[in-house]
Image (cartoon, rainbow, N blue to C red; front, side):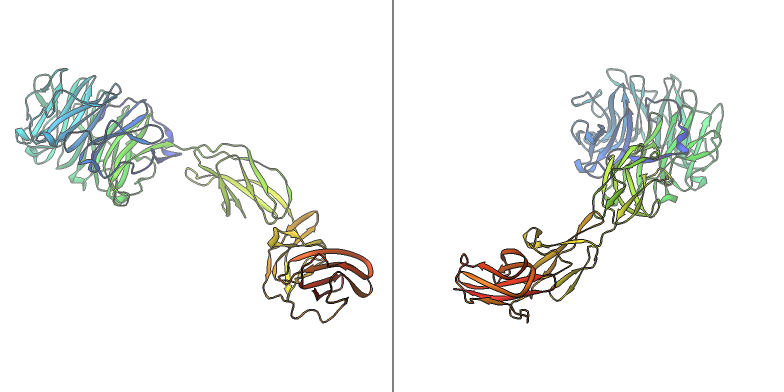
Length: 597
C-alpha cells in the first residue's frame, strides 16, 4: 500500500463519460522492466522498476508534463535490483529494493534533487531478502520483507534517523512468509502475507509496540492464497488477495472486530494476478491482471454494494504484469509492465474524465462557388473538449470522410453541391451529433473530346481559350474556337468560361502530329522559296489567324487578319530552312510548307 497525497472524493464520471488514456507515450522505458512501483506527488507520477536495459539495476522515471524523464541517472543502484518499492515523503522520492550488490539485502535510496543518496547504510537487512515493501509513517520509513537470514520469515525494520532498527523481533512470523504487503495506520505497522504455517492461508499481523500480534486470528481465510495487498482508510484495515478457493479470483476482506468479505468473494471476472489494493477515502480499489480479458489490466472499486469496473474492462492494449495503483486528484492511475509486442516496457495510464466536443457553429466564406475553387469552412464557436479534431463528412453524419482538422478552419474543394457534416472526434463513448452547412457549386463542363489531332470542347455555351501546357499554360493566339487542331506535337488544354466561372481541362498530349500529311486544301503562297515578303492568296475575303512555325512545332509568329483575301508577310528575319505557315479561320485550318533561302 502506497501513501499518496490525494483528494478524498469520487467522480461519478467514472461510470458515465471517462476513458483510460496513456500518460505520455506508452512503453516509455529504455527497455524491459520488472517490479513496476508507482507513486504520485503534486500531480507528478513517478515509476520505479528493475531496468533490464541497465544491467537489471534500479531506475526511476517521472512524467514532466511532456515526456517521461529519468530521475537522476538510469540504473543508479550499485547492482541488480529486485522487488523495487517506491514511496514519497514530502516530495522526496524513496525506493527500497533487494540489492544484488549486497548479498540481496535491502537498500533504501532517496533522491535529494541532485543525486540518489543512501538512507542509513547499504544492505542493512539480513541476506537473501524478497517481497520488499516500503511505507512511511510521517517522515519515518518502514520496510517489510521476507528475511533469508531468518528462514524466510517476515521481518520489519524502520529508520530512526540514524540507523535501521528492527520493529519487534526479526523473523517474527511462525514460518515462511511470502507475498508480503505493508501498510501503516495510526503509526502502527500492519502486514499481510501468505502463511506457510497456516497451509498457505492469509494471515495479517500488527505491531502493538512490544510484539507482533495477529489481527483477529492466524489464517484469516478458509483456503490458500496467492498474492496479497493490504491498505487502510485511516481507521479500518482492508486486504485483497488471490483466493485459491475462488479460482484465484480476487477477494477483499476488512477487519471490524471480526474479518468479513467486502461485497462478494471472488468478484473479479477472471483469474487475477499482480494485484494492488489502494484506498480512495473509504472506498477500496484494486488494480490487477485479469485472465478473462487476455491478461490485460483491469481496475475495480467497491461502491458500498457491488464491485464495479472502472471504464472499459481490460483497458490496456495488450497483456500486463506488475500493476501498481495510485490516485491523482481522485482519479486512478496504473503503472505496469506492458507487453507491447514483446518489449515489456513500462507504461502508465490514467482514468480521465471525458467530455464530448460541443456542437460547432459553422461558417463558409462563400455559399456559392465555382467548381474546383477553394472554400474555407470555419468553426465560429464550439469546443473540442476531450476530442482531438473536427471531422468533416459528406452524405450524412459519419458518412464519407472528407478530412479532419484540429484548428478553427479548413480549406475544402467541393466538386458539386455539398452538405458538410461536422463533429468532434473521437467521441467518449458513442458518436456525437453533427452540425451541418451547405454550399452550391456552379457547374462548368471542361471536358474535351479528341478526334485525330483535333480537340473539341463538349460544352457549346461558353467562351474558349486553348492553352499550351508546355509553356506554362500560355494562351495560343487566335485559338478561341470550340475546337482546336494541333499543328505540331505538344500538350494542349482548354480554358473555358461559363456561367461566370472558369475551369481548365486536363492536358492532352500529341506525339504523332507531323507535317508530312498536311491539309489537302492548299493556299497560294508566292514566291516559294522566298527570301523576304511573301503573298498569301486566300481566294476569298476571310478572317482568322496566321501562324509561322518551325518543324518542331514551335510558334515563331502569329498575326490576326480581318476580311482579307491577300496577306503580305515578311519572312526576312528567319534563317534559311523549311517552315510551316498555318491559316485558321472559323471554318477550316490549312497548313503549308514554305522554304526560306
